[in-house]
Length: 307
Image 1: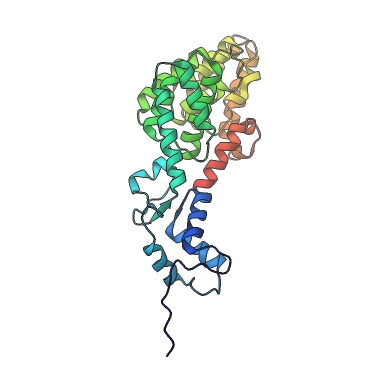
Image 2: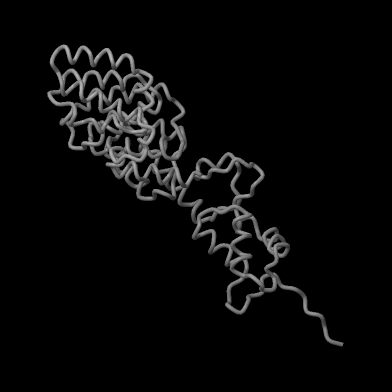
């Protein structure tokens, strides 16, 4: 009588890779993956193979040790950049990625310090892992608080990051009032031509406009009245973030146009006309003016990933 062989869930298939090893490899590559996505992937790759039915995959996953297949709690989703509203969906994370996240969390603590050198180096180190590390709302508060730095390169990078998160990822700092106060102060420092980063002022305007802050309209008025030829900076106001504000202040800007024409400031009046034309154009999203920075393209890509 032949002895019946017992099943061995650790038995290696012909390619020499166990189910457990394969799952770990997938996690290391993807960093994190939901259970439905993992099952779909395995079913597709092993279509028609024995031991890879949906029921068998479920069983094998349930038999894996917790330390080999760590799960994320729903409260941790945002920290890992995961957009998932269903709290019941199981999401696995690789140990390697968890370790990276823990290390970068420790590095982030240096941004909280009073050492400007450590702040900038810590930020640069974290941004080196863009796409692997994600800032949460409280961390964005910290980044916003560093906009008072005297290092223009650092400030420019911080503003770009805030734009990516607020406008692209739909993740906002928890303290909105403080953020607006900081952005208003920064805008006052961003006089035309005073910075070697020409898009910095534009991106600050984007953020203020996103929150429908009237400071944008006040700045537009100052530009129209004080600049010799404000039409040179019309692109700063011709974008989808500022357009809704322009429409809300239409009468106010019309009054200003009359004043400017009466004073003989034709270019200033033309400046406001161009901005209003853009804001009222239903096809404004197709125009090229708002797509003249690489940051805009990154924000658009992040939006597409969210949908």
